[in-house]
Image (tube, rainbow, N blue to C red; front, side):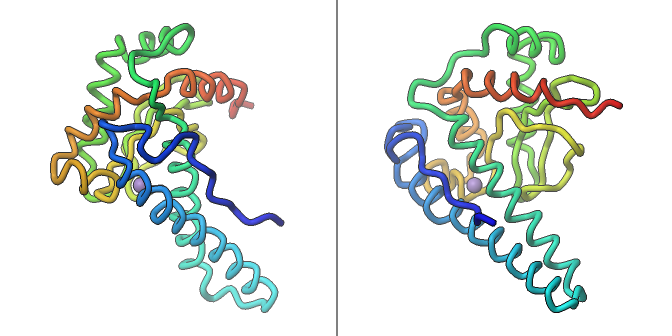
Length: 204
Ligand code: MN
């Protein structure tokens, strides 16, 4: 079975400047994201070893380590494609209509997702997600990479609220980082994810 692999960035490190510095993007991708990929692969390897030995005594810790690292890999993989040097503006078409239906307006979504991101206690993410049972858009405030989630929800647009994501550029002002991210959002990517997610159904 293939190991997880760190995806290449779809742009140069410095392509998102001035909103997101090349130095931070390089560290964030090459070191932090890479560590979650390595951690997910290591956890899977240790779980395979435990199965082979018939010794599942350490399962609790290994499953938590897998959830943390794999979710980190998933969220960062989405994060990079959610951003673009040509990003910004607002959603269009069916995504725009869904945002209006479920949040009232794009501005209301911005306020809720922004506050979900800025207000994370400790490390986490603000996430715009598609919830396939109710077939609605929701905002989630994720702790670490995998806490406070609704099962089955599909992340469409993710804002990283970990200090490693912004501290070298924005210091302690996480709100300024979130304001900068709005200038970079790749709405066609979010719309593509929305379209794919809507094919998923959890209803009987
Ligand atoms: Mn991160």
